[in-house]
Image (cartoon, rainbow, N blue to C red; front, side):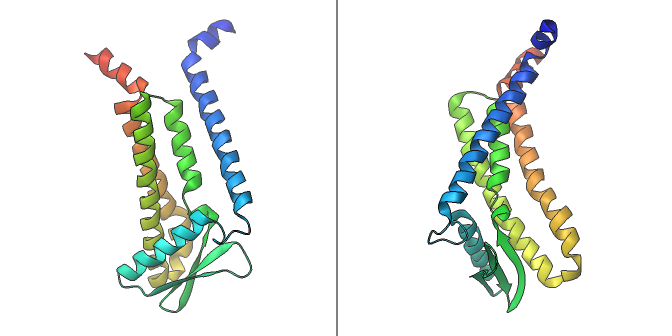
Length: 187
């Protein structure tokens, strides 16, 4: 058993670090959501901000949009050209995806400064990609409402998770300690 632990030490370290960071950040996020109940931003600040920015981007590209608090659930209604299209819920704000991204990058740590910079830039890229994903989804739902299931459950998750995967591959191959080890072993 000891030989197996020694042999797979880096894998075990990755899994434990990933899980620890993921659980800690998820609890912090849950605390934030619980704390934000009853705040001036509905349903919470980040979801409200994503809904507002989605509205602004849609208006910018010529789709007259409005967001309104949903009266029956913690979400924002997205109305495009007078047509109620979708709800912007907490799960649409990309924070859970960013937590997943951060957990992976920290588990494959690199130099502290590089890691922090990559986490910051990567989180912003994911957040922006998510905004454009919601805008494109909204336009798709406006023009092709009968394709809502495919758009929402297949195409657009592929965009956000595809972006995360590309960032992970960039991290592992260029910036993490593992990527550095692979580069030096080739030379």
